[in-house]
Picture 1 (cartoon, rainbow, N blue to C red):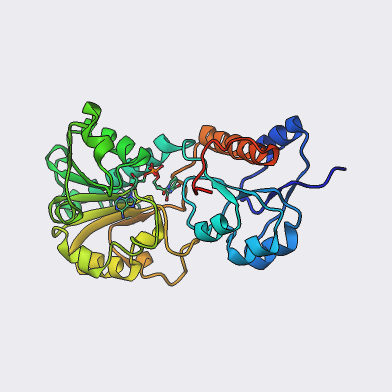
Picture 2: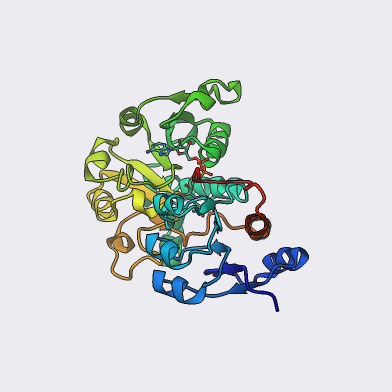
Length: 322
Ligand SMILES: NC(=O)c1ccc[n+]([C@@H]2O[C@H](COP(=O)([O-])OP(=O)(O)OC[C@H]3O[C@@H](n4cnc5c(N)ncnc54)[C@H](O)[C@@H]3O)[C@@H](O)[C@H]2O)c1
């Protein structure tokens, strides 16, 4: 058996059939390990040239301890569990798979927005508890009268913009880069503005930016206080963008009218999280990316990028610049 060149550091999928097919076709030996910590990765992935990685932390300590490692491929878009500065320092090419579930994530944001604005889960609980009173759900606004503010106008943010535009909502958005939006007539319905204007004017704010050192907890007590009374927050991006205690307070005080979140700071959500008892919040278990088709695409594309790394071929989706 040839030396194992590719390690899957961790993977909570039901199987690795797609990865196996790609690695076998390339004739590259691989191994699935289930690492949670830096030390797990160091102990279990010695000799790795490439890793496919889900959540295990890949840090300076890990890169120092596995000098053979040249390529990291994240199952997904976000790379916040990988220390990019350290990777670059050690000559490790970090790649992601940005294009496997764009529509699914946008659909989930829409589903959460519909659930909280139409109070679907609250109404469902009421009926199951034996009551039948639409008035308990008031107020609900006609969707075509609301303004949706999108923070992060990348692939997913723009796919979500199309969806809410189709419902008749006014769409405003903020991104640190907006040239690609302003120069494309396809997005002429989006009004690009400052973050402050989005906070002040949106009835629903949906987060679609990646998490980085500059925007951690960008939604906090101060920014919530700048939002309209009764406004709602949707977060399918990353839990770390939101101060969860402040969100729970804003919902409990009635300043915010609802929230729909697919991602939390700690996943799974802690048993004693204040979000569990907040009103009109719908929480899903980091599932926005998922559909049968997206899961299969993700696994195949992740494995193919790892193979390119081992063969020394150009990466399809590099994240850091070496
Ligand atoms: N819940 C899920 O299952 C799931 C699945 C896939 C992706 N995601 C999350 O969605 C995020 C977006 O994915 P994408 O494919 O659209 O990425 P993308 O890179 O295409 O878009 C992200 C956008 O955010 C912008 N941005 C970065 N920092 C910002 C800030 N501080 N304020 C405003 N805008 C900022 C970037 O300029 C970029 O346009 C990912 O980073 C990931 O965290 C979640």
